[in-house]
Image (cartoon, rainbow over all chains, first blue to last red; front, side, top):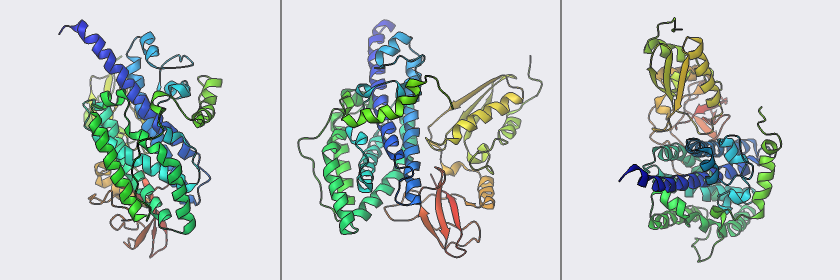
Length: 279
Length: 168
């Protein structure tokens, strides 16, 4: 194979990698932002601090994914890099910050689950539990990816995810097996969030290609995830769950709920209004 | 201009050991095991490899800058700092000396063997020793403490709360 025939193939791989890194990064950034909204509002100081710690982990992981995408994009001719990312304000330079702050809702690829409002404590705990369990099984697979940077981020992140998963699992059990009030609240959270859980296991084409996984691997991921959820639900005296045919979706293709626009308006206001502002 | 100071790998490690963790100032970045490799390319150029502790640790940016400063101040003109994520940083890389410094500072060091680094739900880690009165009669208050790397404990004998540098 000569060098020229390698080029189109290489471009496709790059395109796929950028989309997948943005998907992972956007999930992390929006999760981190939602968790940080609890800062100063937690029921007790220790849990407030726990949530802000977790928010910091999410944002830190988001930086790793954005930085990796930015590194790949910086190595390309600028015109080509700009064509790969759907910026609505053209950045002077493609960096982790411009990827996070200069794309609008339609360019964000996060799951709908993560952008939903925090609701009460029960809803936030259940969301972190669902998301952490998904990320735990996903990162186990990504650690084996031949892209060493992606594998490295997964290997690093999974250690943090384990703490989030244990902590949120304990809260789901406490609330489910707690008082009538706490049980009602976690059941209500369950009804609110369940229609959004299925999207986690409906991979976009760019995810399958970048993650080097067949569709069956996502099916296994879904089975493992559901098993974990039901194991914790049993301890929480909550009813066992199963997936139905239908679920909400669209996030990975940039079709979002109205909530995302509000998050971005708050998060992106400053860098858009005062470009290159520094602390 | 050539570097006037004759550096060896050992002397560079000594320089790096002067860089402190801004959040736990008794520990140097060498104690923490953040610096993985030092390569003196020539008298003016040095390359070091570092591994971050936690993905979102805000101290890492400060540490990066301080490492660069100390190398520039000591005669290097070109400083390359490469961040490598894999193998992921673990508390197992912390030096024994670092663990002693932590204890003396009032922070319980990570356990030497991480047999239950990730225990099941509601299962606690092995007994953590109180850095003040050395009792093992302690309880976990919160798995997430004042910084990403610490958990909050309380001693049930001397009643003092203390930080535990959690295993990772």
